[in-house]
Every structure is written in structure tokens, then in C-alpha cells.
Image 1 (cartoon, one colour):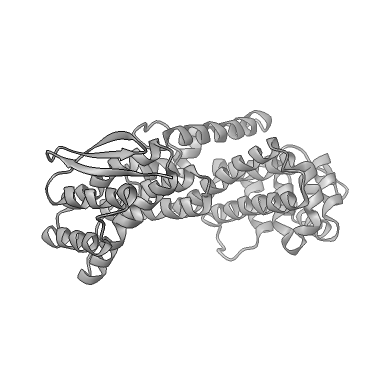
Image 2 (spheres, helix red, strand yellow):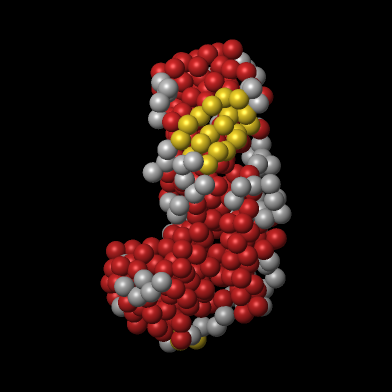
Length: 378
């Protein structure tokens, strides 16, 4: 329970009392000082707040600065100290409400005036709050919205913004609120790439992966989905530590995750393949040909049938390196695993036991296929 009060002092800062402790927020000055004070009252004083007055004040502000991008940024920046204070106080529920409150009248003003305001800042910070409480789906939705705003406003496909640094896992850019999370995810990805490089005798490294894939404007959608899946994968690792990975339902979720990584690979290959409507097997054969990996069309067909008939036995044989009277080694195993995972379709639930038993090995194969596709096609 939060209780407190709000006072505007000498137009320099706004004094907020939260449960007996005083915090001072820098005031944006001018007409925005009143709007920030109203919003602070909404969160802390629970009085002297009129949503209608706040909305009207916001509309008046934008009507006074209809085409001034600096004034538009100043509006959203005015609420950043309040959001930061709530974040630091661990009041994530309150912090998550700052940006919807600030955005709603702006969206209304945009609609009424048939114009657009750059809203990358509020969507980015809103996404940060949501991601920090573990809501990946909503957090990535908001982050995607922030990135769209940045791209539209800057007129660039890869704008130098925190949202772009997030989706490209650019830990070199330290001026981003989620820097620690981005750094952790970049390190996590690097461990998988390093394992691929060492065990498959390849050359791809993290920097090359970021340049060829994550920062490639032509692969923006695929990159965003990949990073989202990577976050889900890391959360899956955490569930294993917590003892939640042994359930049947966990097997279904893990198979869905593997399947989605294969969908990313599918899209990556199709960007380079002659037939946009091609099924997965010929795409995999194309990568095999480009990477000089021995894998025949006949064998891929037989593997697909075997996975359909008996997923558990098929994956045991593939991972063992001998399937359908053929011997598989190295990257050929990875490609065969991906064919099998992609082919499961309606058999997902039936395959949950084998997925739970061999998830690490199957993940290794699926990710290696994605890495190999980037290395030989981009």
C-alpha cells in the first residue's frame, strides 16, 4: 500500500512523499510541470487528479507544438523521472501505468489531427517495465512498437536507439535501460555459437551473427522473433533449475520452442532460395549443398516419414548418428534433427517424452542449423 502527497516547490522540483519518505523529482517546468504534478497526484496522493483535465492539458500542449519533435520528446521526457522513481522503488505495477496514462491523450490528439508524434520513448520504457516483471509476450509487443516508432521517426531501418540495441543484442551500447539484460542475453547467445563453432569446426562468431543477421535490415522480423525465442529459451533453462522441466506440459512447450526456431530458419533460407513457397526439406538440402554436408533427398524423405510414424525412435536414431540405414555425422545430424522437428506438426504432443529426454541435444541441432544457414548464406 502506497500513501503520500505531492507538492510543487519553487518550480524546480516536485516533492513526493511515499510512506513517510520524501523524494524530489526534477520539474520539467512550464505547462508540463502541471501535467507531471497531476500524474504524481494520480499515483501517490489519490486526490486533486482529473483525468479529463490531464487529457485536455496534454491536447493543449500538442496543439501548441504540433510539428515540433523536440517539444514532443520533452513531453515524454517529463514523465521519465516519475517512472524511474517507481522502478527504483520496486513499484512495477505503478511504473507500468505511467506510460499508458501519458500516451492515451497523445493517441487521441494524433487521431483528431491526423498526424503522428514520435512515441519510441514511452513504448520503450513501458516495454522495459513489462519485461522486468517477466511478461515476455507483452514486453516484446511493446518493444516492437517502440522500434517501429524509432524507424518511422528517424527514417532509418536500423536507428541508433535503445530499442534497436535491444533487438540486436548490442551490449556495446551502454546507454540503454536494459543494458544488463542485453549483456546477459548476448553472452548466453555467444555460448551457443561458440559450442557450434567448436564442435562443428565452423567460423561464425557473435559479432558475425549480429552483423549478418540481427543487424540486417532485410531480416528485421526474423531477428526480432529469434531474440524473443532466445529470451524464452533462457527462461526455460531457469525452469529446469526450479524443477519444472520434467512435466509432460514442459515437453510440449519445449517442442513448440524448437519448432519456432525452425520457423525462423525456414524464413532465413527462403530469403536466399529460388522458391518462396518451398517446403522445409528442399530448403535444408539447399543449406547442405552450400555447406558441403552429405545429405540426400531420399534420406530426408525417409527421415520425415520415420518421424511421422514413430517420433521417439526416429530422434533416438538421428541423435545416435544412424538412421534409415545411413550414417550421419556433424552438421548432417543437425540438419536431420531440424527436418524431424519441423515435420512433427500434429504429432507434437506424442513426441513430448523424447523432447524432454533429449531437449539439449535437439536444441543443439536446431540452433546449429540456424547458425549454419547464416554462415553459408549471408
